[in-house]
Image (cartoon, rainbow, N blue to C red; front, side):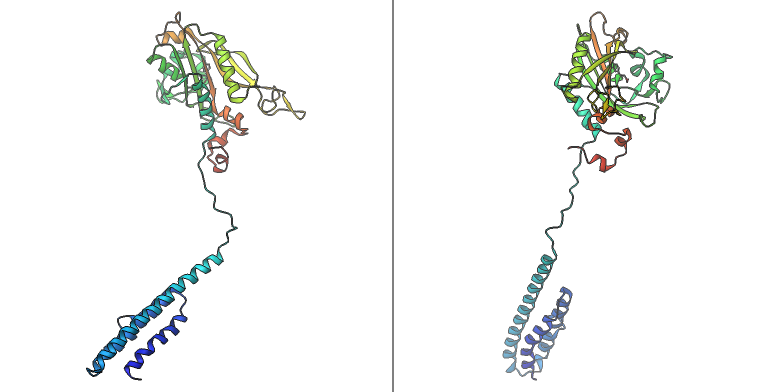
Amino acid sequence: MDLLEQLNALPAQLKERLAQTSTEAELEAVRVDFLGRKGKLAELMAQMRNLTPEQRPAFGQAANAVKTSLIELFEARLAQQEQEREAAFIAGFDPSLPGRTLWNGSLHPITLAMEEVCSVFRNMGYEIAGGPEVETDFNCFEALNMPPEHPARDMQDTLYITDRVLLRTHTSSVQVRTMLKRKPPLAIIGPGKVYRRDSDVTHTPMFHQIEGLLVDKHVTMADLRGTLTAFVRAVFGEKTRVRFRPSFFPFTEPSVEVDMSCTQCGGQGHVNGQPCRVCKGSGWLEILGSGMVDPAVFTAVGYDPDEVTGFAFGLGVERIAMLKYGLTDLRMNFENDVRFLHQFPV
Ligand code: PHE
């Protein structure tokens, strides 16, 4: 075969080789073999110097034409391979398979309960107030009518940092801070974390409280009752019954505990003939501590108890969340199990 024949045979050879390739790597190997710097075409071109000067122009032209058709063949096969790959992918794609789960964040039940309680009071005109979790003995106890050695301090099982500095055991310290800073009238709620030396099935060493305080001229027990009744009904439904029981807190006088009709049995005390397990058969659930601010507290923060009166209340947010969402174990709130957390609305 002379050089020109060898040249003209290249396209047919390439076609044959291309037909046998299936991967991109194989295709590339064939391309190098034909069109590379040391490939078949280059080899033939190198032999051009053996031709006579008269033969060279025709050979050169033919070589260019062959090169173009080699490139075209190669590119056609490349495109074909891409189509084959896509067809194979589509053939293997099952549109009926379930999609991947999108993990949306959700709000923690404590956060939800906290926001709901706060929004009820915000709508009544209360302001949100805050304070630190590390508190002074004065703000947490002394100003709240609990001098050192007062037996009521035992009720709180305090975690101390030093003699006079502690982790706040209730958010009542926020009331003290706010009253020290501002003159009456005052309508605030203080949501936040509190700490007590207590840990068992129904107690965690950290939990959340929301405290409220209203101070003005002529605030009475009737205001307390009306406000807290409206609050309980806003959160648990208009049909909820509310009762006030005498109680004791060092910083309020008189003091009351507020019960509401049980969310589980509707106040019946029993479900299907069995004693209700949520209210233990009583039909009532304790939900708030409250009372008229003790004059000694006003004196401690520089308010005149002859000028102003007020009421205060405090509630546990975990308890609200458990009743609202039907949680059976307090500890679920702190385990951060996404299967649990995921169930709450965004
Ligand atoms: N601070 C009290 C507690 O932690 C709750 C409370 C607040 C009671 C305000 C009366 C008035 O138990």
